[in-house]
Image 1 (tube, helix red, strand yellow):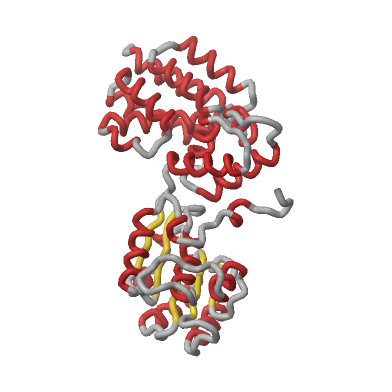
Image 2: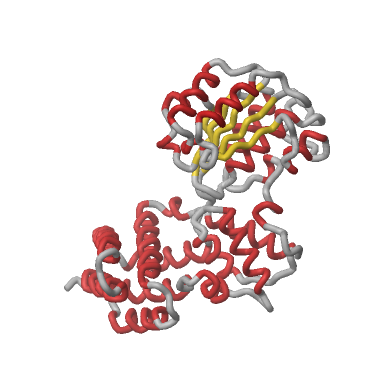
Amino acid sequence: MSQNEIFYEKYRPWQLAHVIGQDAVVKILQKSCEKEFFHHSYLLSGKYGTGKTSVARIIANLLTCENRTNGSSNICGKCSACTGIKEGSSVDIYELDGASNSKIENTRSIIENSKYSPVQFKYKVYIIDECHRLSNAAMTSLLKTLEEPPSTSVFILCTTDFEKVPKEIVSRCQRLNFKPVAPAVISNYLSKLFASKKVEIDQQALDSISIVCKGSVRDALEIAQELIVTASGPIHEKDVADLLGFAGRDEIYSIVSAMSDADLIRSFDFLEQILISGIDARLICEEMSIIFRNIMISKISSKYIQDMTKTEQKFIEEIKGKISMPNLISFLSYFEEAERAFGVNLNNRWVLEAVVVKIIDKQSGK
């Protein structure tokens, strides 16, 4: 593997068909291609690492690819437009980081430029990342252009904080909402990646990565790259836990299982095993709270855990009958109280131990 190879760049999707976990977004854009109707401005919003910038570039490709046939959502990947976008060398495709170019002057230069015809292609495309970071003056200037857009210019705005984008801007864009990618989808994607690299990894390790990255494919790829670089043999869950400094999923399941049985001694034995390995008590508490929350929603309907890993689904189905809904609601309030206590208590371990005792006391019915 090349020393400078960065997975999240190397494996960035360049076709709509390669985008994972965003079926609704892909379907909308495929329909746009079928009808050859594209908006003059898009707003891509959602969690970081879920594909916004990649899809923004794909839209630019769909608009400019010299060999794309009408109605098709496939780009050739070889023409000057496709290679220019991939290499960042196209004179008609502009990318601006709103966080570092937030001033009115930067936006004005784009707006002035958009008035002129494209040099190479049918459209000029402007991709503005983290658009919510633009100044108020820059937003106002951009709004005027979006109200009366040049016929040969398309604006694609990306944001990780949709609430901070002015409603006037939102109303003039087609919004594409990017949701966190489901753990099961990420796990399946990583399984194929490790296989292509001829690196052996077990399912528990894949599940741990897909859960800890919390819906971000970029984070998952960064973790995968670290594991592949440092691996000297098959990769197991413990390797993931050691790399990231968190408790293994099986260890957390063991504690939760013991707590559901109201077994204080067994719970503290498992807890001690994790804590002596140096895992932060606050992280353990967070992981436990997520599992109890997942158990709660599974009692409403099993359909709410279908996007979780098979391992987690199996554990939840086995244990949910042991805990009542009122108890689960109480447990989540205990975790909420603990989160506040972590900020002021001198010892995080004491806070975690208190949560475990309170949950077991509640579960035992005392």
